[in-house]
Amino acid sequence: MADQSQASFVQAETKKLKRELTLLPLFGLLYFTVCGGSFGIEPLIGYSGPGLALLLIAITPLVFSLPNVLMVRELNSMMPVEGGYYHWVKQAFGPFAGFLAGWNNWVVSWLDVAIYPVLAVTYLSYFIPALDSGAMIGGIFLSGPILRWLTAALIIWAISYLQIRGARLSALFTNWLGVFVLLPLGLLSALGIFQWIRSGMTASLPFLPEGQSLIGAFSTGLFVVMWNFMGWELPAVAGDEIVNPRKTYPRAMALTLVATILTYALPVVAGLYGGAGAEGRWQVWGIEAENREVGIISNFVDEETLSQAYEQTADAKGVSVAQVNLFEINVPAVMEVRNRLVEWGVDPTSLSGWEFPQIGDVVGRIVGGESLGRTMGTLLTIAAILSMIGLFVGNSLGGSRIPFALAADGMFPPFLLKVHSRFGTPWIAILLVGVIFTIFSWQAFSFLVVADVFLQTLVILAEFAALWKLRITRPDIPRQAIPGGIGGLILVTLGPVSIILLAIVSQYLEEGFASIGWALAFMVLGALIYFPMRRFVKPGIPDVNPYQASD
Image (cartoon, rainbow, N blue to C red; front, top):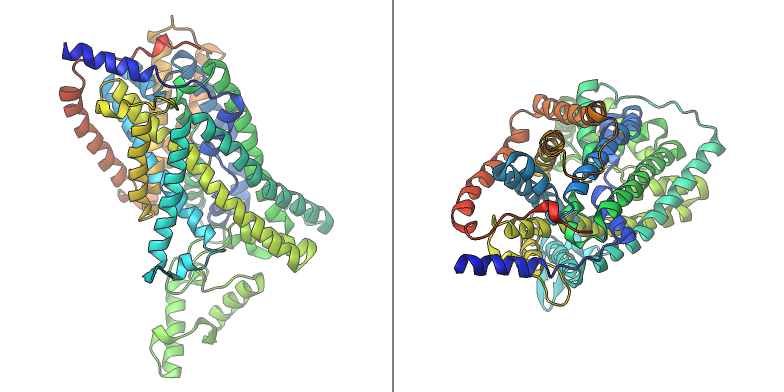
């Protein structure tokens, strides 16, 4: 009787989900899952070089994104249900593999999604300096880190409330965010291309950074560009909330693919050829200081030379090395680099290089003077804040729907199935991930981004394997099949799988086991959780039949 009651509870709650995501709202969610603006692509230029960066931006949509879109289209057309890729992998390889696929991408949401409110607050500190310096509030001094965390938490819970109010409302919010993000990026593109035409600058830029090996630049660039082009399958976890998902989802992916290509390509080209890439300035795009005590000049002067310069200056002045100001050093090798950075408008002691607000400032000043430069910098900073908020909205959707789908299948505690009676959203799951995001936002776990990419790419590999397996074992299931039979499958699979394997191997060769150690640890944790869930939670809850979804 208890088993029947559990099954009835599961069925009753899942039926409360509202199917209200039409094409335009779903496009907004998908865009802010995959792309969300140009912000984040800058390191590709600084670390990999403009030539290789432009090549990767050009070929990645063809050999990585488009095949992913076709794979997701076929699998989603077979099983357009809540849980998406969890069910795809489960139907192909069994419940353990499916659980790990869902678990991996849920962990990815912890590591990835919590970063976006933190980045939004970092950009916001440009307008509110107290977020860096701290402030007295109610007679209590709150330090910069605490204020930043409280502000990030405020963003997290405001968006969580919005998501409880409805998936459509959240999605329409991303549509408006998209407008205000893309307008400044469009203006930057227009100004940069105008300046390129006006200046007659040639199309010649270095292919690689000086002294950088092709393997090293390619390894770094591949992870950056993959991170900026991934996520096509993630909103599929809301399959029961999409209107006519077999048609709506592919159309939303097609729109997103076009928008993503333009979003990355146009501002990058405009920035490089509109003045912010000239005379080597591209070298400061997106970089972080290798030595945070010295600043980004440490990226351009070898450590030994820089250390000796500081020691010589300290000895000459009779002070400690810590008391030496970079601008007091008169060693030629250091002075040359320092003066060049200053000439470019870069503070050589800063901890980071240029992102699009600084790039827009440079292009604006070249085209229309100081006033236009300041205006462009301000507009792009606002756009960056909105972009981070949009990315949080888009990516956090999967963070709540995966635990809901696992609970519906008896693999997570049933309390996560509670659906709001009025808004038709899984509000308990949304609250749970809100707590997780708040905890992870206290520390921006940027060192775990590689683990994030590694875990998500493993799920993508499992999805392509599921595509092949289900073509063979379930040919009877209606689907929007990739055309070309086996040959088409080979062509679609070859590019993404090769890129993913190459990225994993190159990252391992560059960084060693530490680059994947955290990812493997999270996977082991998921495997350990699976067995008690299967033993104590699953009994009495039947498997979801993903093939019975109706449009």
